[in-house]
Image (tube, rainbow, N blue to C red; front, side, top):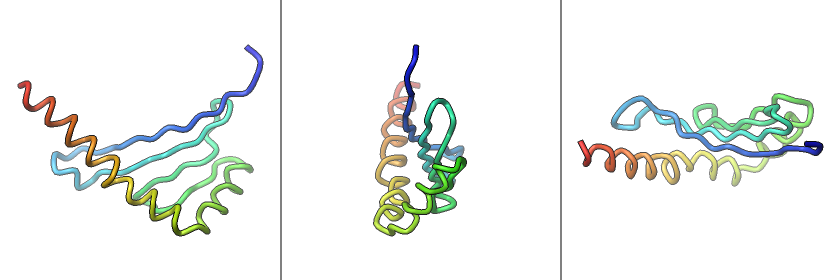
Length: 92
């Protein structure tokens, strides 16, 4: 089909049961090319295309956005991981 395809994806990555290594990743893509990525362990946005670099520069200037994304590890990742893990552990 003709047209454009744009999407964002949020991920929580961890390998320990205490979530101490948990990382929040949020990527923005256009036509299957990643333009922009936020990584909570890096603490800033990184652009991978010309447009993504411009977005990253603007987002990184806004400390409110950066703090909100950093807080997503606790607010979004740990909260949901604890719910999902307890559901699995309670069934075994």
